[in-house]
Length: 396
Image (cartoon, rainbow, N blue to C red):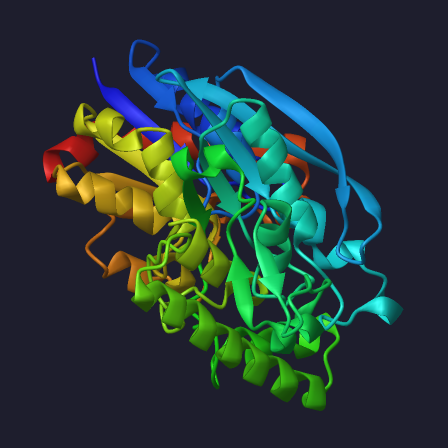
């Protein structure tokens, strides 16, 4: 009996990761009903990540009233679950500080705050969570994470010894940092940050210059924020170098990803000993896919469109990389191919690449994105492919 691991990303716009996986499973079982086929929903830190992390787990959702990016109250939710006697929180920072929470005419990162993100973390700590997986995409902020840190008990003082207010406009006022009220349990928490951008904290490729405009900043605002952030980094890194308690640097202003989410990556690196990792790596570790692949005969991965971008840290490349470690053959399944799919074929990661569109008529392709049709077409494609599986085996 064959053991097959199916770990395919969502086909965006038509099927979730689990729907794709089960369609593949059912197509193979139409031909080989006795095979052991296990489906693992996967994602690269974007759409589908929560499904992947919580599939077949008992999950609790908690909704809190927190401070939104404009300082008003918003409802924000996060999930937590237990594994190996640990309580793990999964938080999307965009729930509390995302760009969609700010009307277009009010977007200005000089004034927006990450305070609500800190409130979500604080609530999760109160619920007994000590391990955190945090997605930091889609932010409306550029406050270097000081809002989040303020909610966790850090003080940022101006020259008169007063706490600063919210937003990037306040960064230039900071002359000292206080740690006396940092919540006690924070030191026992571990933070993995799903981060797929490589921007440093400051400079030409820093968060202000690269992302400030899309958050509502003017050219003058961008220059002010970048200077203020450099000044803030000088203070933080000077305190870290002095050995003063309260800062636990796991990087510096030039660490790739420090500029993620308006500098929130820098706050996690410098104050919370956070680890910035590609989303796909966090997901694959958390669902323990490697253990399953090590025992498999065949691995099937894929995504909606297979092209050169697939090889750039996306789900199929991550899954195939694990399979290659154990010498397992990998089939990449897609809804369609891009023109540069040849790069996938020549990458050495995949034994074969197949697409649903290859077996569809022009009329069928017009409705290929409809969920029910997409599921049935994928099932049919896998059934046809595995009708000739003996030829596949002999070619390995």
